[in-house]
Image (cartoon, rainbow, N blue to C red; front, top):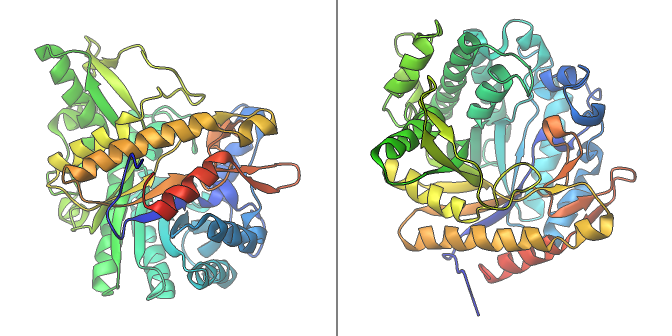
Length: 443
């Protein structure tokens, strides 16, 4: 019996990111990224892990495409490493870096797999960080040049583009909490980074339009489904405030609403105003073609006397290794909310999945918990689509186990197992389940 059926033409894919899988960090002219630097700072990454080799996708991409074909993937979302294209962030172009992605894109097309390129998935060239990174407005201008370079190179071959992956995480975890690269802790820097990231997005979308590119372009963010602790006015208001600091901060400007007043006030009171210049908000609001949604869980919100005005209630559901509650209803719930909030834009679910702790290979290959959660996520997503949400595709995170940022290799999100000693790939039970979902356009 079918539990979830998807519309005809629904696109099924998987997603990865350059620093997490490629390796080859010193090959063919690639420059250093902020993650190369961060990984070498003692105590920043679990077990001192680095992405120097990762999954060695740079050399094994042909085998990985063959694996995608075996699973029946229709689409593949990957990111381009900015330091491979411009080793210093700007200036001299590295042709060998472009040639790698030429081979990858052509290989995907030959296999009948639709490529989606993410321009920025966190690996900023270290040379730009040395000049202030995203806190420096010029980084957004360099990003536009980088984006134009890729648009021109892959014109006609790549039809789906994501400007930024999760600007929320870049700003909040990289520049406020300091637990991700570049490891800064500053309200003032966070405000500048958030604005310049969105400005970079807007400049890239403008370039896409100016160049009359065929295809579609959007942005993807880290999305949590927020739920009020109860229906009391204080907790309902706190839930909306949490959405201001999370979803609305990075979505409202893109949809022409400007920044939430609550967020601007909070940062201004800390001497950290957003560095908005004339014309910026119009640039950021350049119309997009789709919204990318990354979702893994929910948070329950309560009112609180602390300055930010809300806090998260203790979890009541089982906890996954990454600290997320096992809340598969969250994907459908967030899609419904964001669709209502912004006029039902076209959506691709650009990341969704489940992570395991590292452990015995036999256990990791028999990943029944992941299958159970994926069924729950997809059931909720199908329900949202049936209610009218315009969701056009789903990219599971991730194709294979890989470098999980500050967690190193201790967490495994892949539907394919990676043996980090031999670099052999082995499809898990979830990969077979997902292959069946693709064949049946549901389950």
